[in-house]
Length: 449
Ligand code: S3P
Image 1 (cartoon, rainbow, N blue to C red):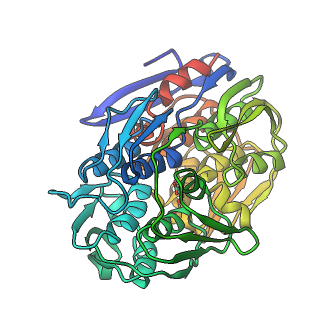
Image 2 (cartoon, rainbow, N blue to C red; image 1 turned 135 degrees about the vertical axis):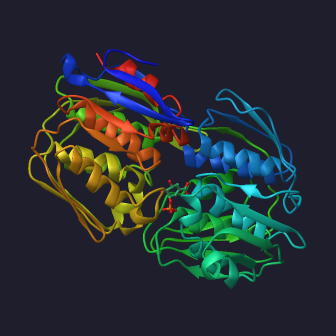
C-alpha cells in the first residue's frame, strides 16, 4: 500500500519501514472509517468460547497477531476454532475443566493478555503439564504479578529469574478459593485470577486499587457465570464451577485503535473524521476524557449497546489543543493510549504532565523511555519522569528516522506525529502495527486528503 505521502519498504526479512511525508502537499484527515475489533474482547471471546460447552460465534474478531496467538494456544489444547476472519469465527469449546495437555510448548507470541489470562486456566487444570513461552519482548515482561495470586490459590508454576519470567512450566492443581488484593489496577491480573476461580469450589475475589477494564466480568456473566461486583471497593467475586455455555459475541471496534485517528484529527488543521462502531465501555474511555480536557473537538453519535458492550460513532474535528494533567484513577482507563496522548500533547499549548503511569515501563516496550527518545528525535520538548512524561507543546516537529522498538502502539503513535511534522519521517520496524492493527497503513492512506 503506498501513496505520494505514505510508503512502505521491506528493510530486512520480516521487517518494514514506513515513510510519511505530509508536507509534500497540504493534508487533512477526512472521511469515514471503521476500525478493527477490540483486542481485549477478541482474546476473551476466544478463551471463553474455548472453555465453554457448545458453540460460540464471534463476529468482528480482531485479526491481529495477538488474537492469532490466543487461537493457536487453545487449538493446541483441544478447542475447535474455525479459520480466523472478521465476519464469523466459530469456536467449539471443550467444556469447563477439559483443556487437554498440549503436546508442545504454548507460544503466546507478543501477547501479554494471552499469557497472563491463559495462566489462570492452565494452573487450575489438575494433572496436566503446560509450558508457555513468548517472543523476546514477552519473555522480559513480569509474570510474577499473576504467579503470586495463583500461588496463593495453590498453583505450581516455575519460571526463569525466581519464577518471574517466561518460559514458564505449569503443573495444574485443584486450586482453592482466595481473596486477592492486587497492588496494581490491571485487568490482566484481575482476569487471570477470575479465570482460575472458574474451576475452584467456592468464591474467588479480586480487589484492585482502581477500576481496570471490565470486559472479563461482562463476558463471564454473558456465558453464565455468577459475579458480584462492588464498584465502591473495586472488588469482583466469582462463584466457582459455573455452567459456561457458548454465546454469540459481537466485538466492537477497539477504542485503543480509534485513539490514533482521534489524535490525528485533533492535530491536523482542517480535519473532520468519523470513526464508526467504536467500543465506549466506560472502563476504556479515559482517552476521550483526556482529549476533552485538552479541548479536542470530539462528538459521540449513534450511541447504542451491542452484545453487552456500549458502542458509538465518534466524530473528531481539528481544534487547537491545550495542555492538561493526566494522573490518578484515569490511568488504567487510558493505559494503552498514553503514547498517542503524548503526541497530542506535543501539539498542545502549555505543558502536559502524565503521572502514575509507571506500568508503561513493562508494556511491549518501555513506553515512557521510547516515547521520550523517539518523539524527542522529532524535536518535541519531552522529558521522562519516573512514572510518566512531561511534554511542552508548540515546537514544530521535524521528520526524521525513528524506531518502533517492535512495539505496535509506538509505531502507530509515531506515524500520527509524522502527519504534522515537516519533511519525511521514517519509522523502522513499523510492521509491529500488525499486532493490534493489521490494516493501519491502508486506513492511513484512506484518511489523508
Ligand atoms: C489488557 C489489559 C491492559 C492493557 C493490555 C490489554 C487486557 O494491561 O494494557 O493492552 O486485555 O486485559 P494490564 O492489565 O497489564 O494493565
